[in-house]
Amino acid sequence: MIRAQTETGGVGHISQPLPPVDDQSSVGQTNLLLVDDDEDYSEAAAGELSDHGFFVNVFSDAPPLLAHLDAGLGGDVIVLDWNLPSILGIDLLPVLRRHGVRIPIIILTGMSATNYEVEALDRGAIDFVDKSRGIPILARRAQLIARASRMPVGVPTGDSVHYGSLVLRPRLCRAYWRGQDVGLTVTEFNIVHKLVENAGEHVSYRAIYDCVHHCGFIAGSGEDGYRTNVRSSIKRIRNKFRLIDPEFSEIENFLAFGYCWRNATAA
Image (cartoon, rainbow, N blue to C red; front, side, top):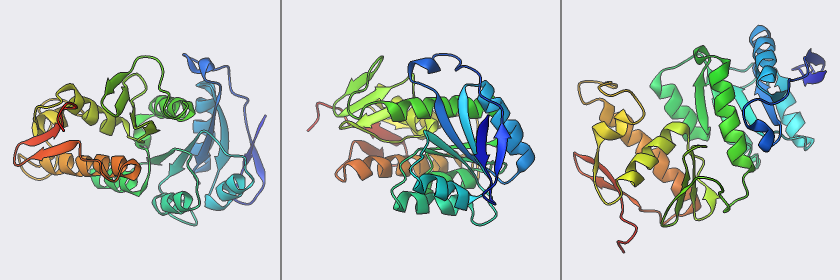
């Protein structure tokens, strides 16, 4: 049985996970830390995640999670609920980063509005999953993120796209800049991939937005409201690259039209 820490320091029990599914066995079992104070949801989610091949530790609040991390027990990925008893998950994110926790974090919430997703990504989450999407989507996202985090820095393997200092691994939705994982979300990766596919040419706001939503989808205020979403996404992407390389300037803006990934041969 897996012993799952609770807010009071006691333990709960979660059934032993089944053998890994898909190609997970090639990278080992994923240790997932689930932080959610909804006991019914946590129990159901942990059981289903176990069926997807995860070893699950459940925490009902931030203090037992921090105690787990302080003890050096770690994990491969943290799934953090937005609302916790002692602190908002969104506020716990920067605290964890300031304390040197580099485990990738997925924010889990029932609040699907775009502004919540933007805030989570700006605070340092690597992904954002609405609970209504279901556990299979959460499991797939966590699998991809955990696999990528295990890859040796600077040594991407398998199918990859090399473009100047950038290496893309489309199958895992990971991007490496000068040997370091940029930490893009799936949506952000899709945008970068779109720009690089058209390197040296300007890609319209609409085309960028359509690569992550279905064609013709409109978001934001007014017919061109999607432009605000695209600008926000590009800002987050640039900031993540600049954490690795403060001089990063590969993404160029074409006023009132869109963006361009600079041609690698251009000085």
